[in-house]
Image (cartoon, rainbow, N blue to C red; front, side):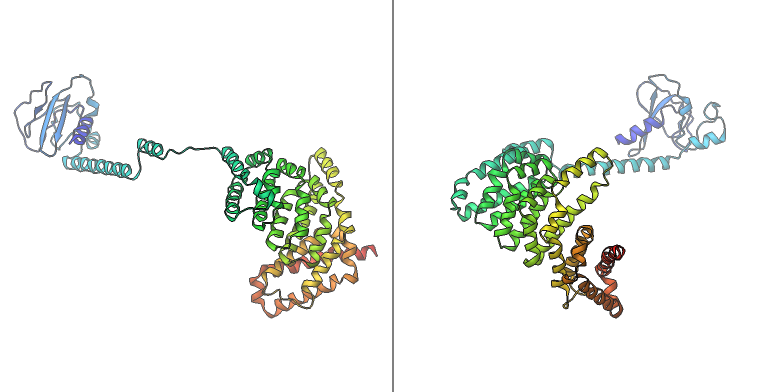
Length: 458
């Protein structure tokens, strides 16, 4: 009922000579400052406040206490308003705009009430669905939970790890202790994706206190997780890369590659090594100076495909870095980078340690006479990585690639012939596998780079 009174009050602040129904009543309504019932058909003088209760049908009116002249907002509640007062409306158009029927007003007010009830119901539903702020505060108090920062969590992980220092050094770790250290590594790997937390880890001597001891252990599971955490910490983080370099981790990773024959450990070792030396010429120099290219040559010669894949990809990335130096717009920065990368002597060391020769051999070993590239995604991906490496190294390795004894071009021609047979004999397979066309075009590009220049030189 409250909604109806408010609405009528707003719409009828000043009502001028109107009656409350279609019936006529000649009796005069005398208004006071108190609400009085208006009889049916009884004319109402101008300037009164009017309210109507649609549940009881009672209309009441009283004098305007504020005595404001607001006759321009007059409203007729029915069709028989008194027409004796010329000020009520000035023409038929204005009257048609101001008049609304009682039934229409009832309908509008009913809709307001329904909408209000719906809003009230929605509010109650929300209250039921969500807890109040006071309830949440009480719940947190009952749990007695302490919220800590990431740096505090990191300090806590160091303290937990310190418990196992003696067992790690003596090689007497129990299975439960190994399990707990693995949990610590899992938490560390999550935290160290943040650059500032990785730097804090390095500042707290995480390389020497956590990483190195686990790389020295005989437990391959701990080595595997330590390598994962190391790779996460140093990746694209120059400050942490420098800390790792100062802790001789380039040498330790190369040693691990040389002595460990577990495929998963070797693969993860290459991941950590790549993260440590990419975009960091000082670490690349340490990699080359400590026999990294020699170790990679052995990997290309007789290792498993996943390890060869990672090693070749890393050499490609290092070569691309050097290509982009000349595209550096800032001249001072470009000259400084050239000086830094020149110290590594990368290109000459590739030749010295027969990397180009090993690369030619790996093509011959894997793709000559026994080609199954139409259905093997793995071998197509491997060939793609090799071709990308040969293309980027073509200025450095061109003489080795041209060497007939290596049999590189005879093998590449076999692959091209095989691709052509697939293209002509099984067009559907060719169309469904974009990598076939991709590698086909890469071989043509490589041949053009090497042979065209060769003919020009002759």
